[in-house]
Length: 437
Image (cartoon, rainbow, N blue to C red; front, side, top):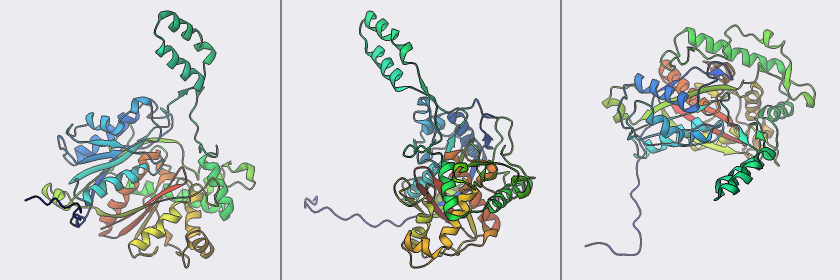
């Protein structure tokens, strides 16, 4: 007999499953208007996806979900990730959806599918992202947009002709701007304010940038990226990479951000360039991986996202990870020093250094983060050991997938360990995660 009581039954507690990171694939990242100048978001993401499918023999496989997104999208990018799946060798019965959280898009997409695997909704899924700054959308002006809609609504030929005649007076286009809608300032200008607030030195920024290039070049030479990248449009390596980069060479560049503030320190060399690219990461349950004989690189443990008031508050645009990390650490019973590797997105060298300095500051940690004491310093030899965004470039939504795949493989090659991932994002947000193996 059915239980018709009005009190709903409490659902049984579900035990979360471990979420295995099985591998990643991306295409080499290209500088704006270079190798991928005429390539669309969909073409790039499909290429990265098919490289992953080929590497893990997923042709015709129906996965639980593919999640990803792009920051810069055309109207033709409607349902971008699903269309990319349909254009790939995956089963067309694989569902997909778009997500957008500025530079945090890729990591947030990976977090989303990881949660689905942990809860048993998916046995396997893919997360990632793509962005092109070369094929950026150009919008028509508001006046022209409204007039075009008026012509479209016209019912008679006469009204259509009259409406069309007004189009010439409404001509106008809006070039996409790399700026924050709330402030009108670019990410670089915001970062320059933070650099000045924290007193970040030019020499330290150049040293961090040079080390990123040197580390990534060495990783390429050692074959580290051989099973993380598939060639695309003639590229086999990231186009921005300069293996011969040194702090001395970078010191010769002129500042480009914060010039009006005086004593500017941020240059094109210690800031990431506009970049095109795509990345994907394959995750699954232990059982799904074992059935296919796939080794586990690492496990996705937890994630935390934070936001700051960079418009009216005291915080810098790209400092939200400083808030997210202590919450993530507390929930997992860890300290900042309990990691073998640190993957901190290098949007700007100054932001990485400001983030580390904030965690070292008793005042910042107490007054801004509400902590009892400073989080402390890290062993910087463990930071971005295979290079990061200053070397690879930063196709906004694709950066998270690159970082997760690199960190997971590094843990595997290390014979185990734990990595902290931190990505700052436009809009005053930060996405962070812990993976371990």
